[in-house]
Length: 153
Image (tube, rainbow, N blue to C red; front, side):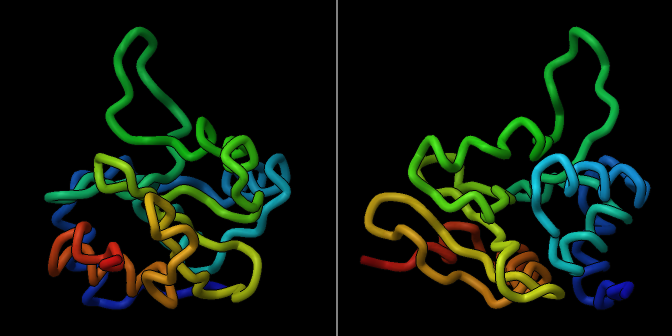
């Protein structure tokens, strides 16, 4: 089932610096290798944008090709997958962003097949719900500040 990217989210992402489209076969291969099934909203993002840099935050994604010897411009989730268990986090979480400091945002690939919830982990906010879907997370972060998504303690 294909998920359409809402116009409001596309408007935000079309202004971002994005890697570019990632083909379905590559996305499916990463899912197979990681044992995950990405929610439909995240798959739609990967298929159209790959990864994105926006004012004030980054959306981690898939970056199939990099220039040898150059520092990475976007964060590729393949470098981050599997490290959650080292930090005691569930393996069904995909790191999708951070605040540049102590807080990391994860997309749950466990429950909702289309949307996926976004949770924040950091000091005093381990596993707090941030949004009920990937697109909601993008809109909230783009129209405010990534720091505003971190629950106050």
